[in-house]
Length: 467
Picture (cartoon, rainbow, N blue to C red):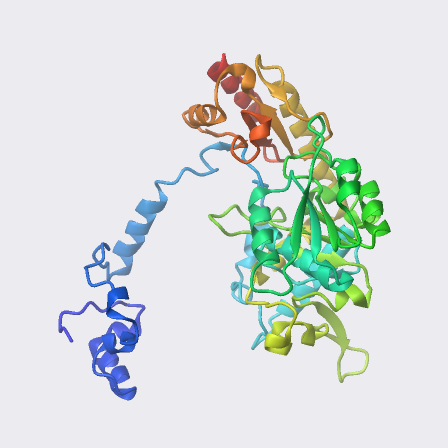
């Protein structure tokens, strides 16, 4: 072993003496002996193109900061990009609480010391249950897409059927997760049938739905608000069609909209799901998201949840209560490979954060933020639609996102977004690849953080770019 080996401060086995001791303990002379079973033709024998090691903490910190500083982020740019993960205001108390030492870990298994974590997770589930008007709420899933996938799996187990109906307006990234989850390693394979939409409104084509729903259908899914922003005003009728055919009605929703919109339970949803990233969680590069599933208090649903649920339980002290798992054997923690689905370490920290946000806002605060978002997004859409060559694609009501078409400007969305970047603005999601039938269209998102001046800046900049 080379005496000039680099010793890394945070990797104990990079110390030559420690590495030699470890190898001796397992009866191996060289570390490469651990990989002897890998055929030689599969081994890489060249020097890897990696930067030289940075052993001291200060230099490493400066190096990483230099990389991060090349990012363009929302503290410097106006952000009108949503498409599944939008920028919302984060109250300072959310960061204050989730940064406490007793909470600051995403680890979600049983706790060696409680420090109030059980209660915070119980409160999160209780607050989400009130928001959703549902009785039972899961702990926390990986993200909203995974929540949709598990909801559909639950529906299949409940009904004993292996087909699900999904809207063609569905979030394409979520659809990819669902496709993988329906036809992956889990059994049985569940077949996906896509339902068309009305090109004028974006709403689900009810005739197409009626022609495709059958005795094989385990679930009918809608997103409300939809990925393309519009509100599915036919939701109650869609749910009725699903239930008349013995299928579950699954609704994926945006929880921050529920201060002004009826929760899915009130228009017939048997399973509600979604992503609670709008509830006090910062935008992150691939993180800051976590999913939920909710149902009514019916054992045929409760027994099919795959994730942990938190409830009250009596203690040995008379009149006192504690917190505990509900039906722990449902999970893979309790039943291992015999469980219906696998559950892993997940996003407990974000559940705590969302619970703090909901407790801070209360019903009145949620109503106010919902109203603010709707007012600002309506103003933005109205102003943008007045730009020559620009029009709104759908005539349905919407919450915070809406589709804008630029065909009349003879410019592509890609070119427009590139020009907006030069003015420190993130434009809308380019839909020309995901939904080519919509032409050169973009999905714009306006939340409560946008001021009238911000929106007017966007409109004026778009006029200059397309004029």
